Length: 425
Image (cartoon, rainbow, N blue to C red; front, side, top):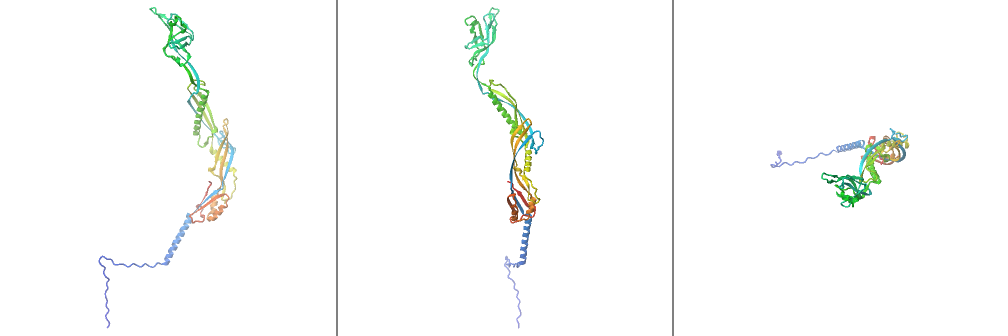
């Protein structure tokens, strides 16, 4: 007989207290190949879209063109006329304007001339008549000898009044002040107060009764070199002072004239209106003063008038062509920065207030580019096509085409993405 089936409950062992049961890792599901392929296609598509966006929205082209240039030189004779108010380009006459200034000053100068100077000392003496109550006449040039032995002479004929007796019968001498001059020049005659005798009375009783006294020094005696004003001194002072005034006057004119006006040194009229020396030639003086006044005026003109004339004149000298609308080029233009004017003074007439100038004009001209036509012709072209198109233009001396980003090989379709730059230097 069959044995009965036995069932046993098998219980897993209980983990020890504090120990976690060990977990088996889960198995990852197998990757679906079709899903991976779809993902790569999506990424590739996104990159293509981004590339297209970059190409059409961020692509740029910069075309730098060095055109053939030409330097033109012209010389024209022009007239500046103060009677004109507006320029007349047809006859090459331009308005001028007069500016004036006036200055004056004075200055002290040293004399350089030398002369031999001799001066006689002079002064006063008081004569006494203690001889009698009768007057005594002395002729001019009467000699008087001082106590120091210096000889002086009277300047003019004089009469010494007689003395007067006082109540006691004593004679009070008559007195007279007279001018005397030393017999010779020199400082040795500049003596102090002294007594004087009259040698003409020597040997007579009058010699001691007529005498003189000085109560102040004799002065003015001199013998030696002295400074004198010469013609060369006055001429040198005139030249130095007027030169200084004229230089200051030119500075004053430059400050007065507006910045857009031209001041030519040859167009300045300088005039001395006043010249007054304090002494004349030959005067003895160590220093002298000179006062001077000058007037300056200039005929000036606007440089902009000449620039406008030069630009218009150059245009008339350059042949202008009738070009088709799709031409890459326009008529030739002047590079403004290259325009140079040189004024050479020829003549001036202050009566009619006119200046004649030789005007030298120099400028660089270049063929201007028709950007609209050129962009239209180049849009969408490859780099090679662009270079071939532009290389065939005789107006181009040098060319540089730059595309961005680096992988772009065609000029953008949109014309606003194309930059064309003319380089003239």
